[in-house]
Length: 130
Image 1: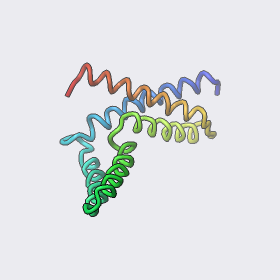
Image 2: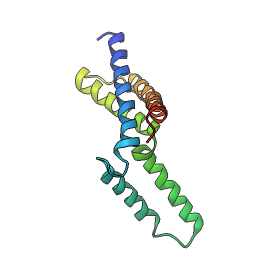
Image 3: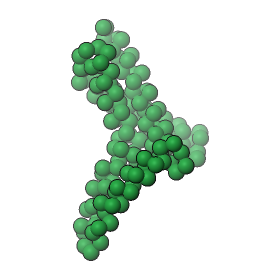
């Protein structure tokens, strides 16, 4: 496997992960769409974690920030979801199809996926506002 082939595979994976992350965060998990029950479940779990503590405002704020930190790479941030998808999909592809894991190439794929996710998100927001 040549270096140019691996870089092309990395580029294609990052483009597809960026596009999928933008679609997942901004379209599929919105109310009334296909993955809305998944988003409702995650928000419900977050509310269940936050709501038992209401007596101390400092403790409540810390819990709210923890829930937001956990939900960010799973549901709310295009960049975080794209990076996660790019990294894990590239590890899967490199291990199962090329029988070796190249961590540097996986990190490069994740970084490019973050960039492409932001690019697709801004293009979608400008050209196709909801």
